[in-house]
Amino acid sequence: MNEILLREQTKGFLNEDIGTGDLSANLIFDREARGKGGFTAKTDGIVCGLFLIKTVYEVYGDYDASVRLYFKDGDRVKKGELLAESEGSVITLLSCERIILNLMQRLSGIATISRTLVDNLNDPSIKVVDTRKTLPGLRMLDKYAVICGGAYNHRMGLYDGVMLKDNHIAFAGGIREAVKKAKDSLGHTVKVEVETETAAQVKEAAAAGADIIMFDNRTPEEVKELVKLVPENIITEVSGGITPETIGKFRGCGAHIISTGFMTHTVTPMDISFNTIGGGKL
Image 1 (spheres, helix red, strand yellow):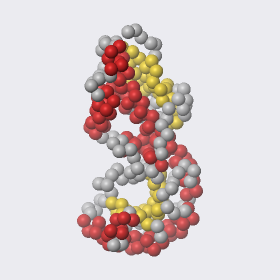
Image 2 (cartoon, one colour; image 1 turned 135 degrees about the vertical axis):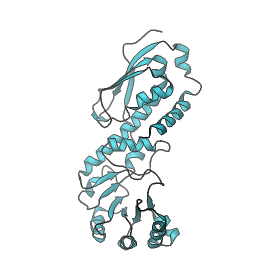
Image 3 (tube, one colour; image 1 turned 60 degrees about the horizontal axis):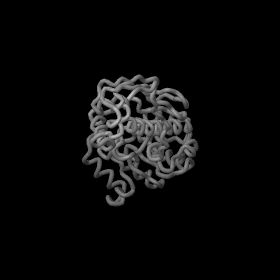
């Protein structure tokens, strides 16, 4: 986790929601009023984003607020369990409440579906990885949640890996031409991945020196045949249409990787609430 980027992003989250100030909290309470509250799971799932509670308070400017965590990111939690407690300025607790909940609920939802995908595949020989289908501005956090759910990250962006998809190949004039142009300019530490749909394309990608070959939108039966065409030194990846309902069909298919955008673009947030503990006085 890039702490500097996280704090910069959190400033943006606070500016968007609070603007020039929280009218509701500031009109009712003074800065000295203190309170206590708890974050509670309203559904079962994998919790993620607990560290954000303290981060949001501090970026808001309140370093005196205290936070006690009862779980760690990646833990399985049950409905009704108290996840964390915070104590501090009532204005801080109220002004930061929604931002914290929005983030924790989304990240916990991603972690939960990531764990479901891994469990449904039930094949330790295949890594389940995410894609770039993340919410703009939240990629770092979305991908962190994937890891907390027990899955893995694909490339973070266009800058840290070469993936030659159908349009790259079409514009370049073919797989061989696209791979050659990429490899002629790359350093030795960057891999080249090629997206394929047919046996002929798989053979061409292997002959061209691809480091990773993706089988795009292929059935489990097709994948089992396509992996036979790939030399052992080349990583194989399955992608396209992978959901919690379909991923189990690829168990034992022989590929090294299954990538899916489902865990980050089809997110059901985990229901988490924040409620006062002990009440207080105006």
